[in-house]
Length: 156
Image (cartoon, rainbow, N blue to C red; front, side, top):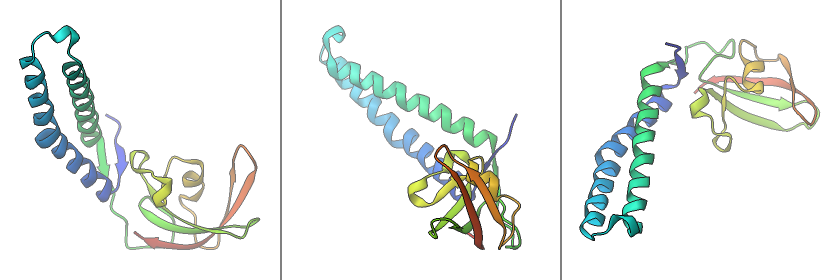
């Protein structure tokens, strides 16, 4: 089985979602199905169809999360900020634009650009891994070649 790198935070978040789905959402949808059944003719019962669809989604998501957790390899950030590794936060400067960005390198399922979390498998993430403060990295985007300088590396 291929292991999936994940931060402790990402792992815990998935565990919480799984627990919520199993203890809150699943019982709620089962009750909704039972109530809809009580209304009679299921072939024309929109509430029943909606509840069954929701149940299908919940069960699918539970299976997906369980598979992710089973293959998860939780990686804790090390004590060294010499090189960029999984889980670290990196401040980079776009050499051409002069703008700074701060990213935390996380697993693919945890990435969320809005909160500054990028996947280690993304083009920027791959370019940063193993680099040091002061290094420059080139990232080819569809629009242009971007050159970043690593300004800071810190433990997240």
